[in-house]
Image (tube, rainbow, N blue to C red):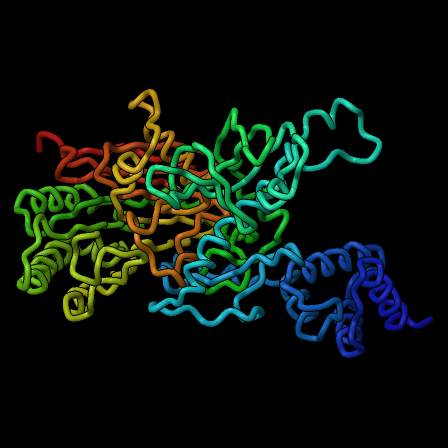
Length: 519
């Protein structure tokens, strides 16, 4: 048998072993692409191609030529490791939307589903889908947790005793017998004032749990149409590495790369070698405050000798609302900031400036995701400081292989005010807050009347897969907490916390507390 035919035979056999069928043109393409591979390495390379094929959102088991081409490109690519992909800012409205398919147990891009393109003026269906998608993401994540995976065939009896099974509310309502050790994943809702219900896509029933619009795991027993809860908690979190090992190199985060930058060894190497890279994070940058501008000037003079990679400046950009003159006032303030930056040529030519609007900055009502400041305010600044980006709230930043989410919202106070049961220790509130966000897989796990969102763009507020860094620009006291391999940072309010800010070093994933004091 000649070599091309032998390769084609091995490729076809490999695909059949995984239940996949190659189109003739795809089979010919793969045989030609693998001709240059050593015979001793052929089987390993075919396995890699198969892995790359299965990581794509396939619509059937019939493999088309385009799918095979993408798989080969993924195995040999270096195109997404170029200098262009070292630093990217992704606005909330540019985040790719993936929808979890329960039948196929994988995420599909919206183009492969029957969902319409998202619109700011969402429909009633968008509102229902918002909660349904939050639920399915947490459900599939929980099912993969070691406590909920069924024991392997032939495993020890003791191993099975430490496992749990998730049940739906529909299954409970259809049961007449007493059920012990029941665990249900559902969302706590207040369908009647003062009465809380646990809800999932299959039904609802009354009980007495704690926080509205949060998803919880409730444990107890079910008897005579009453679910008796003796324990409850949040769904388990999942590190990004575990998520990606299951779903492959899908680029959930967004940006120009066709696949996740996490898979790029070259970007990872660049990230580790560039030890001087740093991100300066400041919140509540009141540009109309003389004192704040003086402190910014001191900050710039201190960093002039070694300019940071990026200044992340979060709103509010005014100390008080100015009514109809706010736009003009902010435009003048940005002009003064541009003058200051231009007086430090090293910073002006080297550092990037990312502006994230706050809840009281000019723009639409207090609803997320929030669009950037309008161009009529920012145009002159952008012309004078070309490495500046006015982006959405929240936004995403991709630096080398790292994923960073930035949100400017006073979330800690909102969540504490709307908590039915506060933590026993106020000192622990930041830890409780971070655990809640990561467990819920969402930046604002609150009722829509407390924290409104554009229904069709709720997916842009997801924290799934878990990023490397989340910046919660909040007026609450500054904190730095690591949970589930995610660094959660709050710089605090710059003017209200004694001019504190945070400095993040991507090369070793550390955060430095900084303060302009006595200067």
